[in-house]
Image (cartoon, rainbow, N blue to C red; front, top):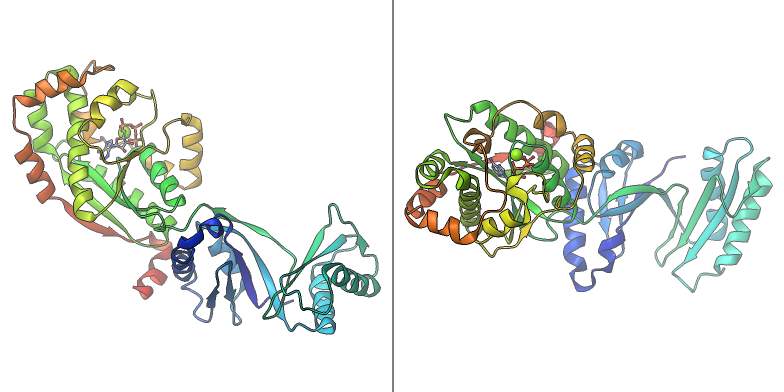
Length: 402
Ligand code: ATP
Ligand code: MG
């Protein structure tokens, strides 16, 4: 049986009222990018659903691509037929026959948004169910747990038949929620935080602090590879800002007592990230912080660090257990990159006993003896901004598109 289209259900976005058009547009864009390797496919989007019209392209291969798109609740390979009961019966029979294996059970679930149709849902269920029972030997009805659930949707333009519902990736379409800056280290957590933010509809730009010669090119490569993975997930390129941080770090080391260097380093990172955010017109900053994990991530630390900005800081991992974070990192394939053993700029000048309960007054006092502003401005001016495209496997089709 050849399906002629894939029906996409929006799920959560369909509850978004007046913003719905924006959501649908973003989703349509994600679908178009993901299916760019199938030139004959056409996308038809309406307020409450989307159809990928296959025009002879392979349904299975297209479904594999759709499984990773945020904003899709579920999808079903489907067939569009005329609103004519004999045609519906015939095509239903072909569809179920193609799937049926000896001894299986079925049911028909009719739905009718076009109330002018000659039969009501019960009558449709009976007419089609009866036709299938007559023509497929051994087929039995089971309304509670059928092996095959034939959905018959009578809509104003046509009738749509489908038998399978495949779960989508959920979430919201990327970019539908605006833009935020992701503070991306080479560690396990921040890529996961980026993934979860994209899943909730954010567009992200990475900001990475790099301290040559204390951190090597290898450490930078790691972050580029992580960004590539995130770009693959996004299905589009990701902007990465690489901040030269050596001078700021040296100044902190010279000006601030050792047990407060970590607090101060984080504050400077946040100030710089916020400047980049302003330039890029983002509305929030995302980190991979997780409550209580290390000295910089106690509530007292967050309170002292967060003082430098009132931009919303999103911490998607804040309450998660490390094991759960690792599970996601493995699923999204960033784990192997994150555990490569290259140093991070925060690990090079680690004080032997960082304050776990730093005080705002103290850190402000220490920072007041030196004017960090020019160094911050210089770092922002010398940011290297790169566009990271999705990894190898998607590269070709991606490049064709842009
Ligand atoms: P991660 O695994 O993301 O590195 P972590 O548990 O190692 O997190 P920290 O190293 O304390 O924790 O970093 C906390 C957060 O600060 C990171 O998740 C990241 O968002 C940000 N961060 C740390 N180092 C850098 C860096 N070099 N560049 C950009 N952001 C950073
Ligand atoms: Mg880290």
